[in-house]
Length: 429
Image (cartoon, rainbow, N blue to C red; front, side, top):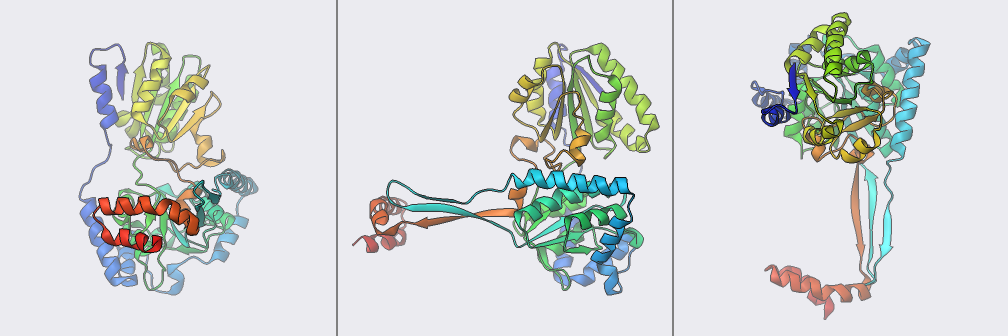
C-alpha cells in the first residue's frame, strides 16, 4: 500500500504514476484470443466443443450439454430461500424502473426552411450477454446487463456462461428467470464471445455483446468491436473514497475492501485530510482483511495497489479525483454537494456517509457496469442506449430542397465531387 502526502516534494510525480498505472499485462493474451476467434469463425460448434472440453472440463456431447433449459431457471428461482427471492425481485424492479427513465424519445420537426427532420430510436434485434462462471459468478451482473436490453425492446437475449465440469450457478439461473432471458449457452471464454459475434451452427449471431469477464473475454470484445457492438473493454475494479476524519474507520475500511476482494489487480484509494484517521483506516483494513473469506485476494490487491493520500484541505481531493477518473467515488464528507458539482469524471458517485458503493452493485437502480482505467473521462456506464440505435429522417419537400439545395451543390463542387453536385442540380433545373 502506497502512502502519499500532498505536501511532499515528490507528490506530483508519485501521483502521476498511480494515474498512469494500467494494472494489467498482456502476457500473450492478444495473440491467443486472435487464434481462438479465427478457429471459432472457421469451425463453429466443433471449435466451441474443443475449447469447452479443454478449459472447462465440460463435454458438449448431447444437445442438453449445450444449453440450459429455461425451466431449470424457474426451478432455481423457486428453490431459493424467500429472502434471496425477494432480494432478486427487489433489485430487478429497481433496476428496471431506473432504466425505463433512460428510454429516448423520437424527434420530428420542421425547420425554418420547411425541411422536415427527425430521428427514430430502435432496439437492436439481438444482444448477447456474457456471465462469468467460477469465483466471479454474479447474478447481479446478469440483472444489470439484461434488464437494460429488455427495457430497450431487444427481441432476443442470448446468455453465455462457462459451466466448469457442467456445474451451474443456481443464483445466476434464478436471475435469468427473473429477467426472462431467451437462451442460456454453457460456453465461456473468448470462444463464447466469438460464437455470439460470428454465429455458429447452433448459436445465431447477435448485434451487441455486453457483460464482464476475464482478460481473455475483454480482449475478445476489443478485437470484435465493429463486427458487433460492445459495451466497453473493462479492466480491474477500482474505488476512490474521499472521507473526512468524522467517519467510522471500520466503515471506510470495508468500503475499500469491497473492491479489493474482486481481483488482485483491483485498486482502492482513500483521500483524507486527517492523517490520524488514515492510520486508523489502515489498521482496520488489516483486521477486516483477516476475517474475510476473500481475504487473500483483498490483501494482495491492497498490498500491491492500495493508496492512501493525505491532503491539506479536503477540497483538493476534487482535482485528484478528476485526474483518477475512477469507476466508483464515495463522498463520505459533511458537505458533499460541492464535491458532486466539482467532479467531472467518474463512473458513479455515492453521496454521503450512508452510501457505500456496494449498495450500487445490487439495489440502488443505476447500472453497476462502469468504465474503469480512467475511461470515465470519455465514456459512461451501461445504459438502455447501448442496446439501441438512432436513425435520422430527412424530408426536404420541393420548397425546402430549393431553399437549401444550392448551398449543398456549391459545397459538393468545392470538395471535388461533381456527381454529388449533379444529383442536386438536376433537381433544381
